[in-house]
Length: 547
Image (cartoon, rainbow, N blue to C red):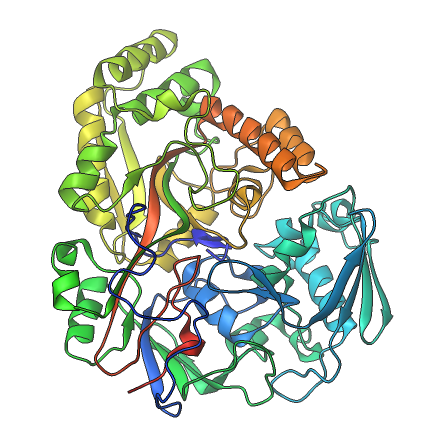
């Protein structure tokens, strides 16, 4: 989700080391169940960024909000530490044709205010998320459902998808527009969470003080904007992720350097991203209290398709030239101390179906001479203005963003003989608002943290025509068609083959430039028991106990 998350946009620059062990320095269990005997009454403190929007499931697609939403709400399924699906509210999800699904939910489940969670809670929430009039960022996630095209069309006043039917309080059916065997896998993502009836009277107000059904609930006046978000255990939650602590308080930090110092002083319990300035020494600073773990995420540079200088044949040449002008390994070595791995495609090596050497991937290799030749060919078609600056927009409150983008734009300027520089934005929220406005005059920093373990999750939400996280407004009928073929495949293996064929189209069009694969490098204080990070690189907050 989110951006880069819960398909989401990444608020912090993640640092990868795919060759490292699953939990370097940690001693957590594979189940993330925490250590027996820990204090389950103390509040755990952690870092975060200010959520971009109100906390509504279908309108949260970045990590600052995503981390909170995944604790406040529960869906039909959740994912364990390794990404396997576990039934949460679903009693069963059944299909005979991968088109028609019958979903039964567990009885007796309630929201934190005591109102029941029913089949209608899901159907109404999904319809709300899909309807064009509600303008929810995650609307795209419902496109598989029959009738989505009608409710999501610009100007549509329709509010219900034809493919959703409530059978009774504990049963609803879903009819898809085409066969999609991996549909159940998505249902743990934020967009598919249920909502109580109280959400619809004033969704904006509800988003500031949401009522969920997850392991935690928002404390009274718990969201102090740009300062902190305080969560307390939800005693009505019955699922597999029951809180093993007295609550989670997220502190909003302007930068991770300050957060790192706070963890060293035992004033902050968990930091999920080590700043570049500490990458050389975090394992010794936090001996036995760190994690260095590959996860399903990547970092990219978006070049919007709506920019005239990057359209047409000359636009394709310029995109390739910029890609080949970037010495990714030099940035990895100089700024991230070797703790990243160059991306060779658009997904993640931790996913089934990953292919490291797709046809066309040579465009992601550093070659300053070739880059200059391609730029000259583009200039022969239409000259790049001598006074024009190629900018890369990014928030500078994340770990390493300012440093690596400054280095990258210096490489672009030197190797192509143009002007290039960072366009710094103070906060992640501000940068996402600017990017979502579709008014960039240059590139923008991007990244993706998986919502569910699938190649498609790195492709459809980011590059599908009209997708909610398609920052650059990329649109390709050929690419969309390949995605549909992959979704309709009769096996995961066949689907992955089609998704990789779709990636070959991306390698020609380059709507974004893949940079490197992500990993979680986090640390924790002396006050808590071993912390485990999951397959998405997120601490399993509910399982943390105090010493």
